[in-house]
Length: 235
Image (cartoon, rainbow, N blue to C red; front, top):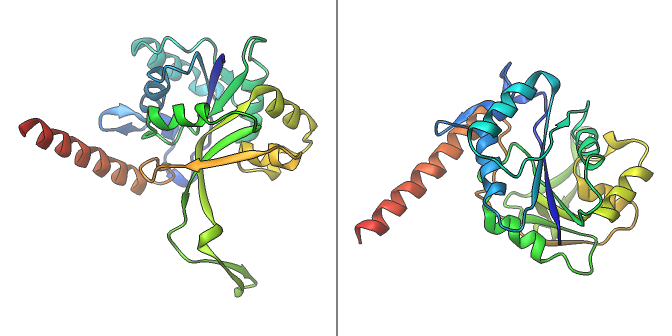
């Protein structure tokens, strides 16, 4: 199946607290964007990559792509006012031969190729496949500062990306959706119109960089993995 990855990186980064797009913020001496692009470049099932950048970030994004041999990038989509509108811009650039689309947050730099591949391989008769991890905290429904209900952790999952879909199903759902601002991920748009979405195990390592503290944690994960690899070599 011809598969295209869409990577939205056009967010405002307000919570990150930086004037610069966090996609270009360094993580272990490489921009966050490059970590993400490399993961998809090195995933055999991915045929093309369409990153999404704001107009003012286009040149910097293109520079990272060209200098680091990200050859699967065939086009760059313009960012929209919201994440979902950015994704829609990219969907409208996809050529006719594509059958599957994988959408991944540009702020999740530690995604593994194995997880990307797994979402694609699990896409059979369903309309989409997403990855998620069990919720560790107790979750309560709150209204007007008072608890209404305590939800069971056994049925709750924290959803991640990549999220993988048959292109036709997702595009039809997007076209029928009038207000994209109501939705926080692509699967929920498909679900709105009756799409069947399968959930597979995610990866706690696959964190989303939202604040500077998340960068510090990602750095810790990478240092720990380097130490473990060095110990294995010594043995």
